[in-house]
Image (cartoon, rainbow over all chains, first blue to last red; front, side, top):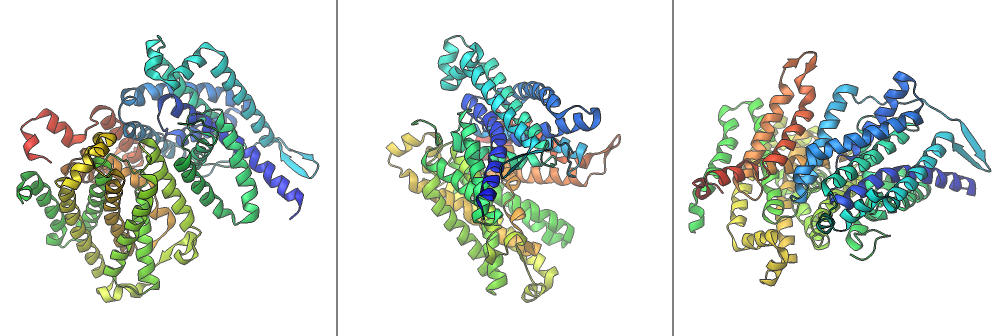
Length: 287
Length: 328
């Protein structure tokens, strides 16, 4: 095994890891602000995939243009899902929100399976590849990583530089206190769920540009976002990017040392260990 | 022994006994299959209710005990030439042991963190078993046809597994009532209401919680062996299907968590509805209703969680005070 193989594998892992990182950002934002584990995340990622696929194959729209459209639709959908399915139980026991999001997952997957069946789809879109030293980089993956950085920067600016972002952070910190300060918490919660859904849809759309997928593929992405979310610190949206990088390194380097099928075993063990030892994540502060 | 005279217990007991005996009287294979899935669901739900309903810890990946039990049992049957009862006990013991070890580690976590870890444990176990050569890796274990011979051939073995599942489900209900009405059960429920207060009152919460977790794991482990023995093969995907876990949670939610009757009614209702939807030939326009089984289940579940969070039995008890004495 030479250095070139290791480097290629590492870079491939990193480029994909950060894309999963976007999905995990959504998951972490939702958990951080409303203490809801969103089990519909995978289904929403799948919808993002199909959104980009359908716009590309039916209307011939460039995947990156459709991505903007999908992002807006995702935001709307998230707000609607919040008001229909979650608002009523947001103050109930966490089991209610877990099962509420899971029923939304069932509804989306059920409708998706009836409409699209489970035959694999491939978007068939390519941006060629570039050669950098010993590395061959696929165009779609480079663009996806660039979009990830852009989205992260935008999310950071939104959370730390705007009034609404400040509201979101305040509600995340202490909802009761935020309400006493006159922050409209129900709108903030709805918006946070919308943004979380938007991030899931964007991640799905990006993944669709380089992997083939079915309506059930979102499930695997959801598992990866859980792992990333915990790595980066549950509730810490920006930590998710770091989590994505770590997962990328693991997925890039572990297969060189062991059979591919052992990689998820290691990932899930890591997931359990971090939750046991430091549930606030590698980056998180003390509880 | 006054507690064994409570009408609420006898109501549930008689219900499950009737359900269990129904196919035996009819001697009908189709009814037996329906009964098998219903009793399996009832036992899963009643067992899960011990940790979820009584203790208040939501084990999201509870299917890990069913899957591991099934695998250990199948391994004993296939590679160790064990008899079915030994395999069933082995599966239950393996599940109980896993719950004991896990319980020591993960029951420290509260709320959603616990739920997340149980999902992680199930996925870690599934991916591990897929790589574990003695258990056949990704293809799993397939039983030889000759294994059914001592049980009077495959057809007779199906009846035998049915009797076993019926017996286990009746035991599950009795055991669940035993736990609920004991001092130990009171400890569990006080943990559910306020864990810190329970600890102050002298309940050794880590031990009690671990006990409850073990109790809720053993019967699913035994069921796993029976199910996969009947099935003839076991694969990681079927054994550790997270959806099965969540279905059991839904059954408990439907009927009412923490009650004795709730999980039984919930499991019965859920399985009947699912069966009806899956076998219905109803067409709406060009759409077959059975293609929408998942959607309809999802919508129903959402409605129940949003509007009747205490489940059917909890709701009845709130509405009709007279029932509070009778229903458990």
